[in-house]
Length: 184
Image 1 (spheres, rainbow, N blue to C red):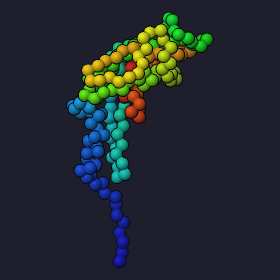
Image 2: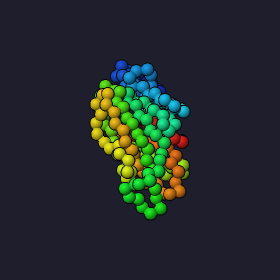
Image 3: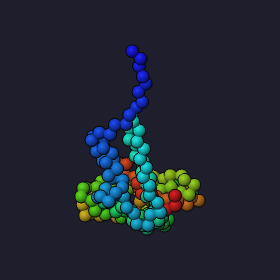
């Protein structure tokens, strides 16, 4: 008996349809899981489907300094970078730059927040982690219940000649930054 080659067939079952909807529900649409922004310059969502896996790529919303970005009911506003005139301590030849951050939990679920979820990068694309060295009230960490808010400074130590280019927000639960303020 002669055998013939079989081509792979993409079969979408009820379970895979639910998985696709769950993957996309936090990224687009008009439901409570949408990503919206105020002052955004661009957002995008691309979905690639193959016979082996579903891949969803989300490009972070790019916002101007001072703009509010919203992700799954969480509103985050980031002020423009300021040089701290009285940082707690700083290496010779460095400066401390901070951004005022305000987060409002408008979702139905508690939100864990952390100042370490923010990363500053300069115009040369070098990245800096939050150091907490500012003399301003620190953003800190904790849990916000629905309807609660928190604000404070996230601070970064940069070389004197570095110019802040942008600030990314990537919560621990995300694989990539979700919101970016400043220059791309």
